[in-house]
Image 1: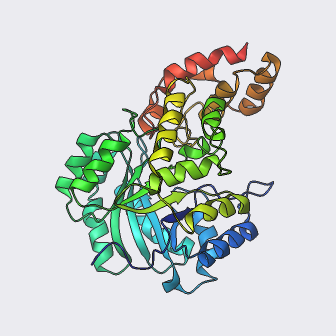
Image 2: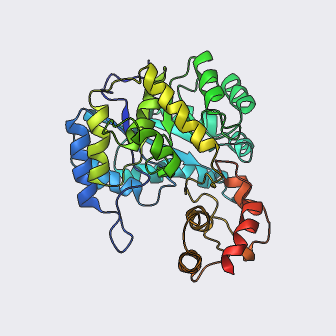
Length: 372
């Protein structure tokens, strides 16, 4: 049975990780439901959630599952073993049951072994998770299984060799990381093609960084006078690649949904000139020294000092061109009641968990100057 179910009419997938929030921090279900309606009306079918996305599976139930026939869309979720966590095998295998209860979906069309990298892949093997997901498929609780991957090409080949029945792979691909050795987007994508594995794409706008890029990158796109959003360049770049099942966009507002659908509803691959524009944008990015954090917060979940690492990095990145008093004020706000960069005890938990493989300890050391 092909991993392509035949329901996928758009290459755009609705990533449910960064849903709109109310002032109290809860997910805005009304706005999420409007976004779901727009997505489905445009022909979208692929929805992506995960056990680890706080509130996401419940939001999927309220905004999607309880409002549409189950055979009118496909839903993906994931089983996650956080690097360095003390989760037991029983707790890991319980995640599927919990995800089904939260979502009310009955089954998942796609189920992924989540966020595999060097720091956690052995734990998935030790707990027999690969055999477990095969059992779930035999039981009809999932229709297709694959894995999301944040590791190096050598590990990817090892996994695809050991587990040839994995049906698809989710990779971080975007124009910023295409040749980034820490992500190896291009080589990992090539390996999936060589092994005949369709790819779902995460982080096509790199956690929002490419939807609102640095000024030098904006200037490259603005010179084209295309009237297209910065996000459109990033998404079309990825969607133009071969062997792509879905490009997941973590949309956070009705406006973002409208923008994404404006160019993905009737998708047009990049032409030769547009590819050259992307190369100029890549060159502009490579000349910048900002911290390429995507604010996934995997690093903070086990931090013993409760340091808000992504928020500190955001302040550090915004420091360029900002008055010193404003930078200090922003730093004080994001660290209020939490740990500061100087509180880091260099335990390494954050670096083990980081999908971008950032040298977080040394970067926090640099951020200490924000404290005055």
